[in-house]
Every structure is written in structure tokens, then in C-alpha cells.
Image (cartoon, rainbow, N blue to C red):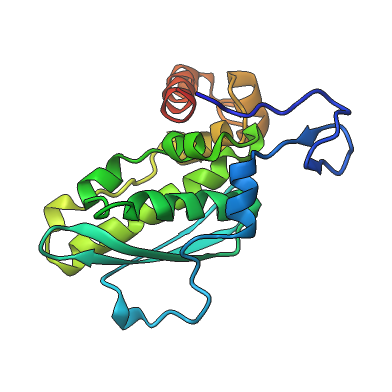
Length: 223
Ligand code: FES
């Protein structure tokens, strides 16, 4: 997989962090989708025009994304995917690319769209800087929320998949979602996850479960 790594400190990139310690590079595809976002909803959404709506906020950065889909009831293919976000350039590029991918050709079926992973979107974008991975997860989650909305509206309740969070450390009240966010933010070791979340500091008995979750989310998002 072609993940763009944060380059060597001091190298001139597309963006330099405010402490000037690191530069980030964006692929030409990312820049193209950022400057020319596909399927962006410029006007106010007329919600009656759509039969599936999704919304998600990112705990990692506080940004929000909304999507509106037209699904063909006969085939459950996505015929239109429009979106708006208060997210960053990476979220804009990722959602723009996702909107293209789910509507290409005849449009993905909802089952196919559910199999789309953040890695697939990043691959088509030519990678994202590591600390921006969570931005591509934002569109993935909004897409899943819209798919659930479609199934809810069509009374196919058995097809709805929700991800409830589970408390992993009752002392610090850290959940599996907190660990997921930490991994997406680049904390790939127990030590780094503990720095971010304080998980297990007063309750070391939960650490094996934490390590297992770190492995799971690393595999899920970074392969
Ligand atoms: S930093 Fe919030 S979506 Fe990218």
C-alpha cells in the first residue's frame, strides 16, 4: 500500500506543521480532489430528494461530515452521492474520492459500498500523511451511517450494523472507540496509546485487552 509517510524534518512540503518540525506532502490526486471536489453539494440539501442520509462527527478533530445518497430501490445501487463537510483538506479529498468510487459505472450496491475500506480510498488518492488517516475514516463512517439510514427507511432492520462502544478500562472510562481514535491519530504502541488516553494507568489488568485492540485497529486501518 502506498501510504505517504511524513517526510524528514525540515524538508519543504505542501504543508509545514506550526512548530516547523515536519512537512506534509500531498499527492497530485489529493490536491486535485481538494481544489475540485466531486459531488460536493453547493446548495442546501432538499432532503426529500434523497433516500439515505448520513452524518458523522470526528472525536479526533471535532470536524463533521454529512452525506446524501440516492439509492435505486430495485437494485440497491448508489446512483448519487452528495456531501458537505466542515472537515480539512484531507477529509474533502477523501470524501470526494469516495463519492466517485461508490457511483462509478452503474454505482456500487450497498453491500459493495460496505466493503469499501478507508485504505481503498487512500490508495486511489495516492496516500495521505499519516496523521491525516482519520480524515478518510470520517467519510467511511458517514457512508456507513447513510447505508444504515437506507435500511432503516426500508424496514430492513436486520441489515443495520451499529458499532456501540465498549468500556475497556472501567477506571479511566476509556472505550474501544477511544483506542481506535488514538491508533488513527498515529499512536501505534501501548505507550503512545497510554499517553493519549491514560488507559490502564490505574488498572494494568486491562492492558492485554488494550494491546489486542491496538493490533486489531492497526491491521484494520494500516494493513
Ligand atoms: S482534521 Fe478533521 S477531518 Fe481532517
